[in-house]
Every structure is written in C-alpha cells, then in structure tokens.
Image 1 (cartoon, rainbow, N blue to C red):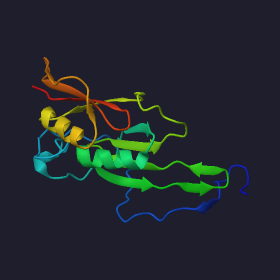
Image 2 (cartoon, rainbow, N blue to C red; image 1 turned 90 degrees about the vertical axis):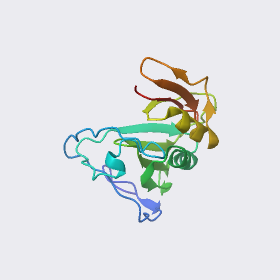
Image 3 (cartoon, rainbow, N blue to C red; image 1 turned 90 degrees about the horizontal axis):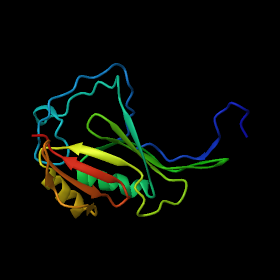
Length: 178
C-alpha cells in the first residue's frame, strides 16, 4: 500500500497504443474559417487539410455513458472524429478506474468515460450542438450508425436544424448556418 499523498499502486495497466498523444494547452488558438469537406464533421479544417493545433486553450467536454468503448466507436464512425488518447481499465488496489477515451472533436477534446452507476437508456445526460455544412447528410450518417432521429429537420432563421439521440442517450442538435 502507498503512503498518504502517494499515487495508488497499479496492479495491471494496459500498454499505451502508438496512436496515443496527449494534448496540452499553451495559449488561445485563433478560430479557423469554416470550410465544409466531403465527409464527417471535419468542416473546420482549413482547405481540407489538418492544421497543426495550438493547444494553449483546449476545452474538454466530458460525456458519461454506459459503454465508453462503444460510444467512442460510434462518434468516430458517425461523426468522423479521431481518437487521440485511450485509457483502458486500470486495476488499482482500491478498485477499478473507469475506461476513458479522448476524441479530437474539431477544436475540443470530447472525453468519453464509463459511468460508475447504471445509466437509464432513456436518460438524456448531455446536449451537444454541431454546426455543419450539410445537417441532412450528417443526421442520415449518424442514423445509419444507430442514432435515432428526434423529429423532423426544420428550416430556422439560422439554417436547417435537426436532432438525434445517439445510441448512448446523448441528444445532439445538428444545424447549419445560412
């Protein structure tokens, strides 16, 4: 056992993957112009190319789900985002540390982690808003990967807007700007 103030002893820690990279903030990054690319929510990529990220101000959004591994797969495939860090279940002397995955969510880090208590399937634990060039296409893509459309896609003063609930109970509003 470790002393008070010491880190817990790790009895089984999975090896890091070669794809893992940690993002660290240094100073605020300028906003890039919105440019739609042919697939996914990579609409903030300038000229369709990935920019080297200035991580000085790097907002993190935390999302508790019943299955972090499945949710991360859904977001990678339905929204086309990239995994930047993944941590498996670590076994500590005092119990398990939940699995967490960090996704590069176009300027934000979306941290998806397993709930430590049962999650009701109908419970909405979060609300997220995505602004994209073609909400109809992204909603159809998300539905094809298991999301449920919530109502019709409508025309608003800001552009087209629709809502989905992903397979992990999170409500997403997907819109375009005019």
